[in-house]
Picture 1 (tube, chains in turn yellow, cyan):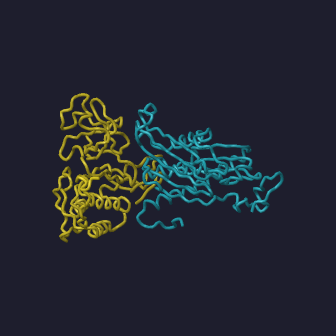
Picture 2 (cartoon, one colour; picture 1 turned 135 degrees about the vertical axis):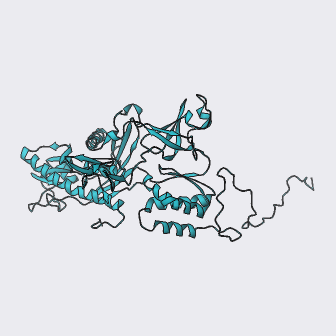
Picture 3 (tube, rainbow over the protein chains, first blue to last red; picture 1 turned 45 degrees about the vertical axis):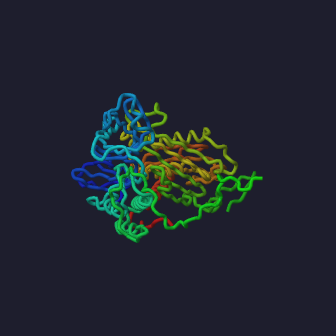
Length: 263
Length: 250
């Protein structure tokens, strides 16, 4: 049930949790979202707004500042997240941070802790974490990330299976896509579909029919999906014979030949 | 409907009790609100109110710029109300003037009373209000747009903030003045209400009123605010509900 700030909530004895407040014995919603009783609390789950970090979330950030012993990452949260040089797999000397990550670089990190001042501690030490090279980052509303993953990963598996793309999903709504330009394009289109229209019923069917309708056919006519092992750092495959281009005749001018008839 | 009386001052109230646009004294102008009009902002709203057209965008909570303005224990709320150069008949010189600064200040202070700023220490909640077309009551339209934008941005608040201006025209108390009524009337009283508590978080006045007229104006304004409150909620429900909303705006 959708509630708006200021609307009274029937708490039925539950205590006010996140997204609610209590005044004069009554409980009210403080944010726009879905009412969710979670005994002994009642809370409101946000449908919009910035990403609010939780410990252990894996997020994608971009470097906005480089300091002597740490970098500052923009993770689309209320504050920037400092990444300390000891929180990386590299042996970084003091003052050498710039060599490893520059402003604009994208990284996958994990939220470690949040302290009372709002500081968001992150680390790049861990499986699946690290610097991102190439590819594209698409940003959607954090509230939609669960639908991108799907129940037990079903949606993300559908997406990667039909496109052969590599996808890294950040809980902060940032999603990295690696692969051929056409795979990136199709995955982006699906992500925007989920972001704009994700709450309408039948999302899985719409995503699947889009992916099947846009399945590319190569010269051999095969419709099998591309293998998923394409390494995200590999350059595009060297020139395959191009069927569409006419073999254009070589131009006839030979500027290096001496003039046969010097005057 | 309007006729011009002595000295080229329009007759604001007819003998039948109708205003120059045919409204009765307690009638609002037509209002249409669209939540989430801007995809890039964290929250946004577009309000068409009579001939007013106002856009509000909210960014935040986010890092404070400039850094020295940050508060250790809560978010700061910064508001910039601005009128486009083409918003009024006579081109308004671009940039903030004293009037814009005053309106920015009172709107920011109104929201400070309702936003749970302690949830986001050392951050800023930035509210931008652009008036694209002006016809009196722009600070109220801007406040309403900003309030819907804040809800759209997921900012925790006590309540939405409906706002309206009440005035005195031809000696009578009237709700929601339009441009001519504001220019030629005897008083103008913009106000903003917290429906959950019944308290006002913005109240300003220009002109002259007796104490009785003030009491009457506050009553009329609160009633007007409650009607506007319903429109604000409808706009947000239209944006976020899955099923079609009954009684949705045309």
